Length: 466
Image (cartoon, rainbow, N blue to C red; front, side, top):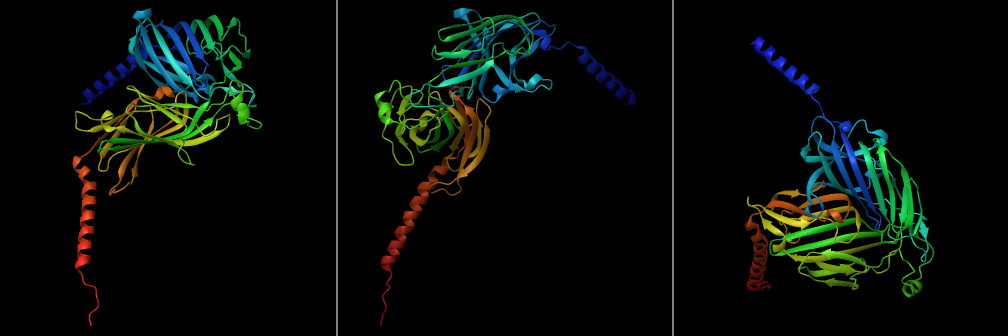
């Protein structure tokens, strides 16, 4: 017995030693042959398209590729997506890859990482082309911070002319697109060139890992900086055939603050020059077959809205009671109904599930905090949510008319939401159809007791006898 234990211990030690001497793919074994970055600054939601041709120069396969971000950008990252491009030009196909945050103990200068998990590990000597998309919010800094009604809005954008990467980059180039050709100033890192609405940095050759060259671009951006500070959406499911949606908005203009006195006469007579960075209209894309739409605030119903119904989508164009300038805010509620058969289905295991869209229906809007509350029918059990990205989930109880035990509410919370998050999510639950008879039986019993009480009252003699 003792000999057998010694033999097992020696085998375990040998396997451990073998794992130590086996080659592992490190950052030095990966190099970026070519990198192209395109930064879109035409909106207040910054979109960055990054194309990387990565080569494995090591002796062992690589199963992940790291993306590096400076600490000033991490808190503003809303979306990070990656896909592998296969083929050329029109025959090119894309395979999505998993992207997740990753902590490394030896990160220089507070660099933060995201790991791209390759579905097919990159063998030694092979190369692969990665298409990366990431979005930044609250990354444009108004300067000056206050403007009058007749002034245009100027903003700062801060980044690096060189792509921050843990790998050696042989060749790289960066393009920055601005909304207009009005660029007040930009940092020059030779070679740098500006033509119209595009800034070009590079090409740069042979830069080591973690190279960084800060640049600042000062330009005009009058696009509406529409930010929903908080959005609470309640989705109430009724198995009697309807889905009721209620959305409560706290909207703000996050651009340069308005200074001076607002003149409505000037605003309406000089629409092209007065208040160019303000906005008075918002467009909400709602699901098709929407009905019973309403739009109101604390004062009451707001009639300045227009609904366009379509087979694929419905568009609700709304106008707040007053135009929004920088620093101004507005609160309102949008409500509508939807047919239940378009969004509620039954899974093969007998569970019901709601298939609905996450995100905010307002176009080109950032949501600082989004809370979705899915109110399940009374009697539902075992709720669970499937969301394609990380969210905070918990359960609540809600009591409505004729409820006895209360309705289960699935709450999903997420911060820093952009239009890319408008993807379907599912909420699964078990439901016994017998509970649909609870409210009709309660109403029937109540009317029956009322009738019996009335009949008894009519047949009782309450008069006093001599």
